[in-house]
Length: 401
Ligand SMILES: Cc1cc2nc3c(=O)[nH]c(=O)nc-3n(C[C@H](O)[C@H](O)[C@H](O)COP(=O)(O)OP(=O)(O)OC[C@H]3O[C@@H](n4cnc5c(N)ncnc54)[C@H](O)[C@@H]3O)c2cc1C
Image (cartoon, rainbow, N blue to C red; front, side):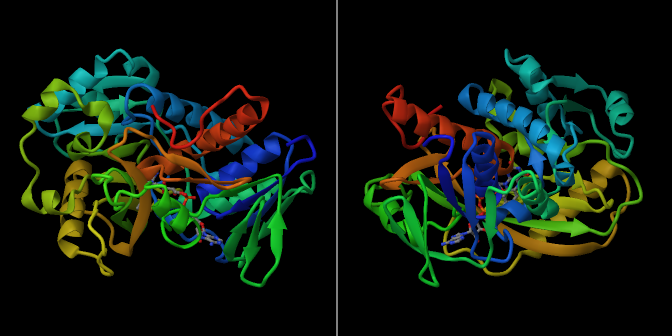
């Protein structure tokens, strides 16, 4: 690809949109296809957490830190994303949780995460809305927040401004066939480029399904031992506006069980979760939206077929946990939804990238870190492709830490 190269991107979620942005930054013209009128997948259903705190030491943390830097740069020309470097507080309500946080705050890379263990009064000084009872909190200044319901159009309008005539957004365009350096949409039109990037989200059948099955990339593939791409379903909700102001994102002690950054010796001493939380693999994450409402989640289901309905027991548990940390009743829940993401399980990979056919690359599977890492993943796609072209890189595929 040269300066006049053309990139076709399939998928209007955050991965596809960040590939569009990085492609434009590198001088390529972009045609961006989305089957819906706008992104409708995980990218609009998430918390909008740019979450550095929980990332695994090493390549995953490095990717998240690079992404955090890129998010700040990109938000400079797309302020409608609502990017804010608000940081996060993970709150300990038991000595066992506090012990895990103390160890995490002493790890060699704690400085990169901008971790600081705070006493209760210090937690309240940072985030006065936390009026409940707790023993302390782990402050992560590196974490940030964006607004998932508006970030995609905000990024696109920055791309499509009068100074960027080389960006074409084609919603309502479903891709149904792949060929070398091209895709065909359901109306029969071919869209060709020097490179095609498929960012089709949690769809592991359809377009790339045959390729994924044939290459044994799926956790469900025979002989995979459950390692590879799999889907995860989460339950979420959003309240009416909360009268107070949360200055940071908030997580409860259960989140220590789900993020690899906290795999420290004292983690084993955490008592089991309450039965309802264990059944739905719940952790509390809480983010205040710009309109004052609270996004609250989440749960984790791994076994397909997923339920088509949402479970109230998990919601009751999450609402009780949030009210306990805030020390006050919550506003009425206005919206409930579920979302599905794709992750690479059991291989140590951070996400999946593979060549589906000549000139067509699939990028998916960032799991619960896709909103965070998407700009850096997109950057790696172009570095990998350009490296292959110049012969400086010899491999591609699922990126290993
Ligand atoms: C409830 C929930 C909470 C989360 N919270 C966070 C968080 O706070 N922070 C974080 O970092 N990550 C979070 N994640 C993960 C993150 O949201 C995902 O990793 C990320 O959004 C994946 O982006 P994507 O673009 O790959 O997929 P998607 O957003 O699903 O986008 C894929 C798009 O491709 C389109 N498409 C598919 N097939 C075709 C086709 N054939 N033709 C045309 N278009 C097609 C789809 O319509 C869709 O719009 C969360 C996920 C969920 C579900």
